[in-house]
Length: 380
Figure 1 (spheres, rainbow, N blue to C red):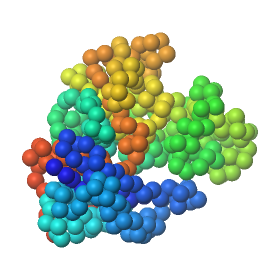
Figure 2: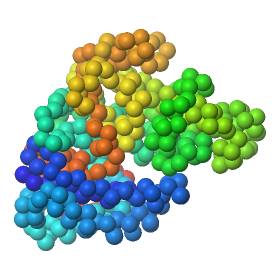
Figure 3: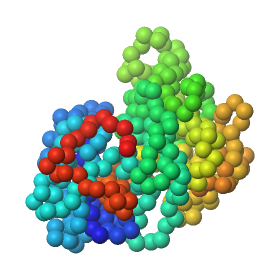
Figure 4: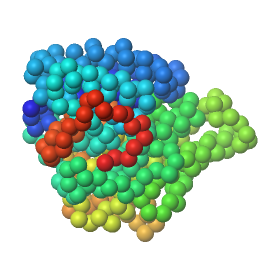
């Protein structure tokens, strides 16, 4: 089985070829991050035009890297939802055209499903352990923060979501406050390496159940920076970086990162207590590349994908516990999985593996003449 997959939901133009067993035969990504660094965020119209220029060369390179032709391809897969309207259009129209011209079945894949299934990718033909069902997935990116319960392949129940900002968006906004470059996740992580994560106490939002809220954390950082600089709260956020020393920026970055990671892990602890039958905990999305989050969640790394956990933690106040004391935060009865760091961001290999498991589960293809994009639609 050979699947040509296409991803263009935001600002990466990507194509990949996935083979039997979800093995990566090629994976090509053209990023627009350098274009948008000067703007501090993605401009949808510019992103769409950039996709239009890159999409066909990227598809051709994916085929060349896999040493295949169109005749070797059995299926085509594409991200149809959610994402930026213009960006999604370029990818889906390309996939629809190729499916019609080449006479191949077309699979329309939800973007969040792709991120989750990045944990099943096989790179280089090596043997890996894969998540076992039922499982809990935490999808964390610039646009999404959700806890999803999966009793089996292609079965999704959203049990927690953000009520305002996504955690990745919060990283970007805090980076702007601190005068750090876009994208915020990597720049905060880099600055935090020289900072004290306990220097500034930042609040944990009091949200009942498994939902998240990150707008208050962003505002808490803003107020803390203003207070640290002895400035009134009317001081615009874009002026604050000029008042901060490099040490202060590092301490704020480390304190924010520590707080954000603890909030995520606390909610996953609660989710696991509500679903004790879960056999795996899966992390997915761009923020899952964060090293502090991984270090807090994992122990005993075996092969870069599967990691053993220790005894269940979490104190009576709901704070993440056990990491420093040698105890675990999820429990020895479950395993936790992260994708390889290079597959946490948007890429087409994850689209291909999601389509692979749709095909293996008996899901039928989409109609290439009728497929429409869905900029906002829940995972299903």
